[in-house]
Length: 331
Image (cartoon, rainbow, N blue to C red; front, side, top):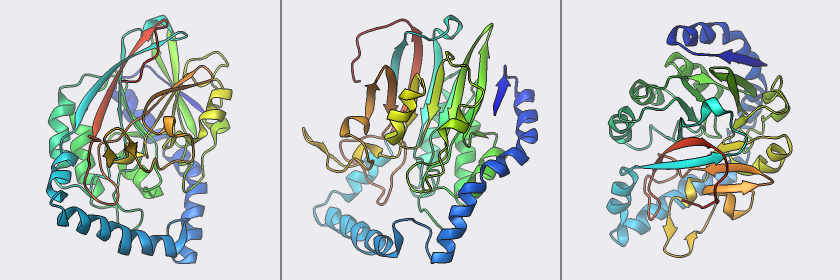
């Protein structure tokens, strides 16, 4: 289903209210998966053994190791030092009215797992004046349990962003269905296998979002692109870069994702030891291309497992979309 927006904030409020029933319907498959996990006694498709290893061996082992070598506090400081990355992105088929369009991309907040992050991000975001803001999932630190700690901190984030065409987001593999309702109450607009038309003058582009393809596997790209014209300029939000081949085949022009944290802990020269996604490593961080489609996988603003980063700063990404072509370079 395609919605159309040429937004004022009044239009945003009207759409949010009208979309509640639709949101519930679109969250149906995810709720069913959550219920299935609950019946099995866990909320992660990899099962109890993986959870035990992650929570009781890998996480504490990594933290203890970093403390022993005196690097844990440095890693914590790094996790609270976000950078703003500005990228001019030339798009040959971008409608002329969108030349210079500023798109703010944030992902992987894990906002209740890193104390002080929201307070650091908010003033930085106030200085950015985007036309449109997108979030590509993972708002909470753990992947089960209560979500109450997410909303006060995400409120600081959403209130700091002033985007002419609003804030749009998708769910990640750490998020439960209830988070979609909580975030909409904060003024976000959640795309769950659906799209929205963004107008600028007589021109349009389409913003589509799929549910998590990684753990919940509730993504439905066909539904997300329903109603989008064949030649329309399409921006796809997907939590992981894994569905890049299908997206390119469906004519997506720009694919935005997160999840990988770019490894979160990177080594000089070598880079990340683990790229956290079932696709080639070149898709796990930064700008990439596939079959004429451009993509960007952000390192995210938060941390997973352990709140530390090395050689991999958290990033706020601001794209300036430009008409025409230019030599492709990774930032």
